[in-house]
Length: 261
Ligand SMILES: [Zn+2]
Ligand SMILES: [Zn+2]
Image: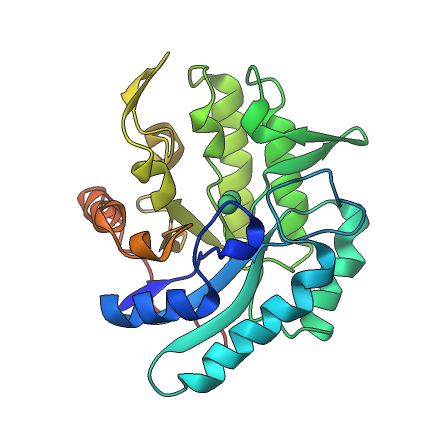
């Protein structure tokens, strides 16, 4: 059974394809469960983060996903969600995504995190010093109970530093929090799509980082493969196939269907 719980649309400004385009691509690829998780706009972020739809567009996005779900009911299961960061000041807003928009789940994509009142961006860290704080922000997010799944926790593998003790510590905090809260860990195929590059700790894809995944087999932590597709062409591509192959060789059996009610 083919499933994907991490899908972006052109609304975010750096992806192509409408909701309808993705549903067509999914049905063509034999994907029977498709979760839409475009980047969520956040209150007071207008202009600060260019990689997401404006806040005013959010209702239209959810309506478009609902429309696709209605149109194709019985043929493909469509889940309505967003990929979003957690910071304490957004807790009420995130709760309203459930009460006002009835999202099926929330995907934590902690690109930004709160560090002593400022926004730190994990994709621009120059060294590993902030990674434990990044990991603690993921733990804090999961402990709200608002998130079912953690996207690309090892996104920092794209930065030009080698894996070190801070990375170990960050990994352990994240995996412990996922286990504690019964959340799901995402293996992100978009990192595979970026291809092998040279890093101070060797030639590898930017993420998923092998050191992050070392303790996962046998841990009992549920894993999904997220396509993190930014174009309908790659919803199910070689990177997704390779992801399943790598996980299998690691002894990890990814979850297929999630029980989202
Ligand atoms: Zn994106
Ligand atoms: Zn992301």
